Image (cartoon, rainbow, N blue to C red; front, side, top):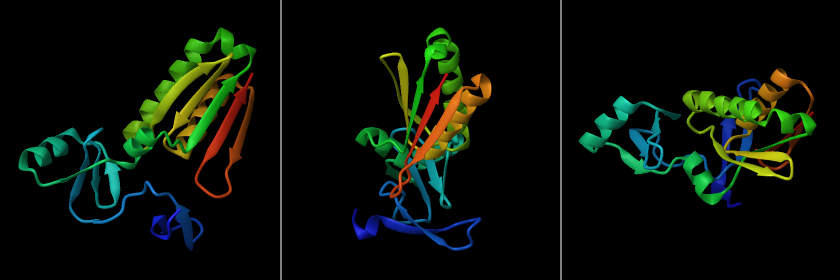
Length: 170
C-alpha cells in the first residue's frame, strides 16, 4: 500500500480522524461531475449516486469526466470488501427463497449507494458464497438472512483493511 493510497476521513461518531486504507476511494478533483463508464453512477459533491436524467444531460453536453467508479474497479480486480458464507441443512431446502432475499437486499443497497454491490454468488458443496464491494452490504445481507430465518450469525473483521467475513448457518 502506497502512502498516497492512505486517506484520512473524519469519523462522524468518533469526532476524530480515522485512517482509511482503500486505494479504490476516489482521488483528484472534488469539483464538477464524474460519470462511471461501466455503471453510469455519478460522482458529484463527494458522493456517488444514480440519476439517469443527470447522466443523459452530462453525456450529451460532454461536461463530465468519464471514470471508473470504485465498485466497478473492485469488480474488475476481483477485490471484495465483504464475503458472506451461507450454510447448513436449512439452506438446502430454502435456497431459492434465501437467494431471492439476498438479491433483494443487494438491489435495495444499490439504490441507496451505487458503491454497494453484490460482485458474485457462487454455490459450492452445499454452501453459498457471496462477494460484495462493500463491507456494509455484507453485514446487511447477513442481518437480513438472520432476521428472516434465525440461525447462527458471525462477523469476522480484518484488522488492517475494511473487510468482513459474515458466516450464517442453520
